[in-house]
Length: 108
Image (cartoon, rainbow, N blue to C red; front, top):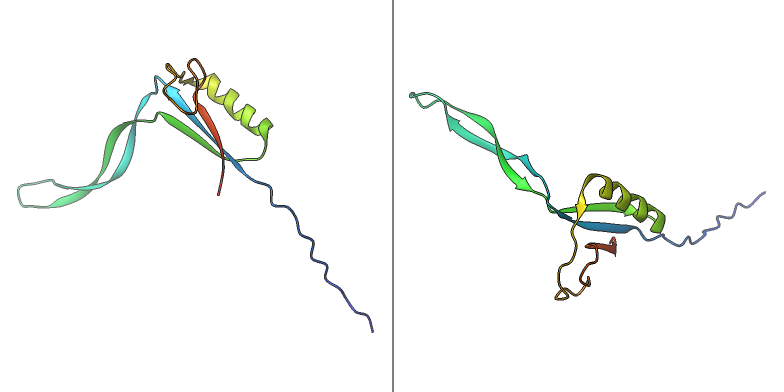
């Protein structure tokens, strides 16, 4: 008779990181925000139409980054396509004047 033992190994859960980048001169895009009921004829018939709004996205977030190498690659991709905002004054807690405005935090 053989006895099988189950060995539970505790693995250290690796923390995932999130990168938030503030953009300068961000583009405005049309975004579908929902449906809107519109009356189409005098008899009162109506139909649902997609409602769109113009939005300006001033931040980008990247989730699921594992280490500093992933963060640097995400930042380089952002630098290729966008301008990262520069802090103009020292009134902000996170950035000094002249620094790029991005923030690295742990995901929950």
